Amino acid sequence: MVSALIQHEWLSKSLFTIYGEVDIESIDKSPKVGLALALKP
Image: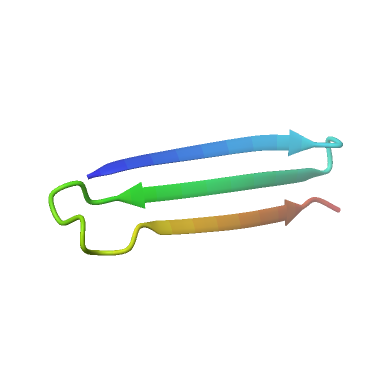
């Protein structure tokens, strides 16, 4: 299992996150990918 998470604070009031995960032992399965955007008031 290989995974990665990247977070970037954008304009000091928002946080952008990208996540990916791949199971290298079962290549026939699709990788998981996620995106998130958090806004601060």
